[in-house]
Length: 112
Image (cartoon, rainbow, N blue to C red; front, side):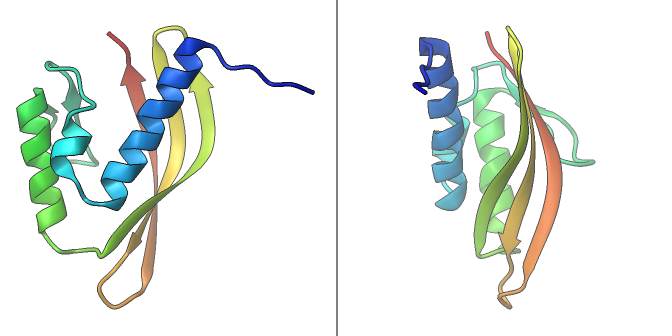
């Protein structure tokens, strides 16, 4: 069986894969570069941050806390809608003492 991907599929796959690289390297600037200039991010109960520069500053602060040594993601489910990509995943944080913390999350990516 041959699987084919559309240009949109490739773009979305590339976006997701690049975000994993930026997370793995704790590259806040690279991660923020994936956001629309007016895009926003909200993690947990933190307030929503809007604008590419603000998103970059948010991730820079988040990564600088030193709460974890490594960040990985495990994709569980994906809903690919015409204007939105929704995915359920688990963030896997390796802590300074080498213990591992798994935190489930849902991302909603709206394309502009």
